[in-house]
Image 1 (cartoon, rainbow, N blue to C red):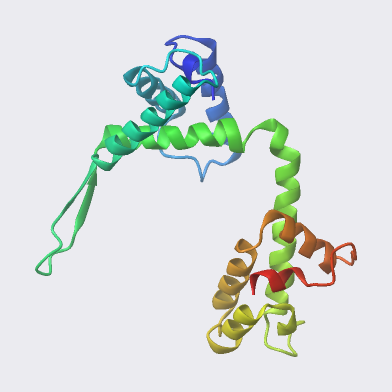
Image 2 (image 1 turned 30 degrees about the horizontal axis):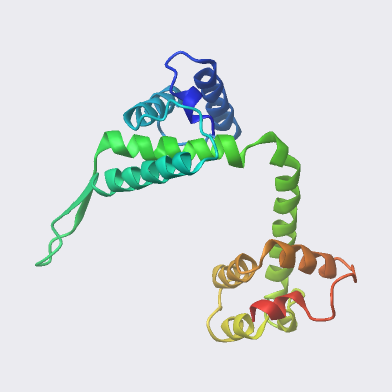
Length: 214
């Protein structure tokens, strides 16, 4: 992330960040935070100025030390930005977060979104990963049906998930939770391997990929 260039008040990188945020807002309007893109850009600039990150980052011991210090100071700042009131003696606890710091946290999250998650070079890989995850969910959700119904086949699940299906997953929502937990426990390579085997590929070892997470 070009933090040093984002420190420039009217620099080209801030204009680029604004455009990236606007693109992200158009691509996912429901998932975009309530803050306006220009407010997020201002918050990023404020954070960088506050911690004197105007110099370009270089992979030196001093630069890494400064970056670790930067992260530590931010953690402290945001831990101190919230407070709890009430709670004991039957009173409802109330969480309060300082508005300025809340916007800064959102801005930092969106930096990751636009510079890392939505990086154009990752788009093809991400589309492929979404397809793999979607296919695995559809397949296992169908297999999670009671045996003999709608393609249900609990043999395809590792022992722990199989036990949950029998003993606690009585509704479609509960079955979906079992499937989501199963998929989230997979590594990227094991998810691809499992998808390959379920699609008819035979390049993987004999051991079923799900056995590794049983």
